[in-house]
Amino acid sequence: MKKIILTVFTFVALVSCQTDEAYEDLNRDPKNPTQVEAAFLFTAATKSLYDQMTSTNVNTNVFRMLGQHWTETTYTDEANFDLNGRNITQNHWSELYRDVLLDLTTARENTNNDAVLTQVEKDTRNAQIEILMVYTWAHLVETYGDIPYTQALSPNEFVLPAYDDAATIYTDLLARLTAAIPNITDSGFGAADPIYGGDSAKWQKFGNSLLLRMGIRIADAPGFSTLSQAAVTTAVSGGVFTSNDDNASLVYSGTTPNTNPVWVDLVQSGRSDFIAANTLVDIMNALEDPRRPFYFDQNLGAGIYKGGPYGDNNSYSLYTHLGDRMLDPTNPASILDYSEVSFYLADAAERSLSGTPAMAAEFYNEGIRASFNEWGAPGVEAYLAKPAVKYTTAPGTWKEKIGKQFWLAMYNRGYEAWTAWRTYDVPTLNLPAESGLPVPTRYTYPVNEQNLNEVNWSAASAAIGGDEQTTKLFWDVN
Image 1 (cartoon, rainbow, N blue to C red):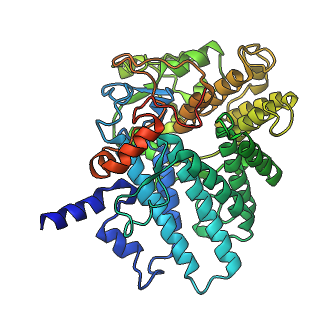
Image 2 (image 1 turned 90 degrees about the vertical axis):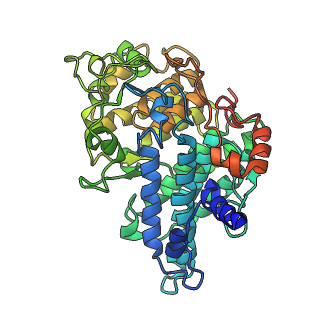
């Protein structure tokens, strides 16, 4: 009996194949694979992905703190980089494997087994599924390093999945994405698609923009220059985002349970746990950045912004609060936007991967314009003319110029703010006031993996250079 209980517990707890009987009954009936509509699963997986990437609940998502746009007040463990006290890395891993990748996998199975759909409809739906799966897999690789991949979504066959090499996974993901994009020729999931409502042209742009992002991500990785250039060239020729109208955004509702999760954490909870961090506010003050009254509240007085010392035990009333948009339950969330794409194009131009270095300035400017436009902030042209902002006069290398403005534009995009810092190594982030620990460059593997999948976890940890928060991943070489 003990062996049976242990086996069941292992099967349930293993995050890379986490499931339970209720989930199996709902989604994976082998005698009736279309028991749950593929469209329902696709919508549910999409919302789970957006919720996870958007939430600021300290049990699930602390990227806004890792990027040092926000800091904490009473409870400061997360701002001091204690990521395991609340099982943050565990919860993030589980949510993406279980509620995103497994649901998308089942949606694909049910799509393929649907006798009513035409082949064109199936191909488009599968391509939409594939784009979200590639996004999620790439995110996991960029966050943890080596991960379970080839064995991860077959829990009946692989209870203790092996880890695959991160660079090898990334190479495969680029191939999968490149192959999927041309298959989007129909409305796919149509009204059940919460991102684009079945707009095939926008899905193609989304896929190409993701391909661009991934190509730039590996541009500095040894041995990846050819693959990087191929991805960037294919993405740009295929057509990437050209305005904020193309953003991969999900619009939330004003009623629960479909409100923006940030509203849940900041308003519905009745708590005052977050304030603007001095890391961000000090830089924006120095530039007299016109986005400040849109990013932040003016609770200290008109035009007064004071960020809380990062990682300190800050008094909520003494520092700048988060802006009204963060308190809106309907505030849209994005997992890829035009501003981000524009900065990637500036990077690609400087590397002569797409265009020439002479074109970088306009892409850089367009990235800033897109951010201002998204936030409704005025004065962008005057801002672009400031010597500290203008591409030809701003201090630093081209990477430092792009990286700084990229990081500023990713407000409310905590993961991309952190990743912009990991990519370009700007700005200089603060050491947290209490712990003094260095800023993490990755999430450590979940504790469940250490306890229940020890052999594979140990091999993966050794392969990436140690399961530490400061281990550099294969693409992060600067």
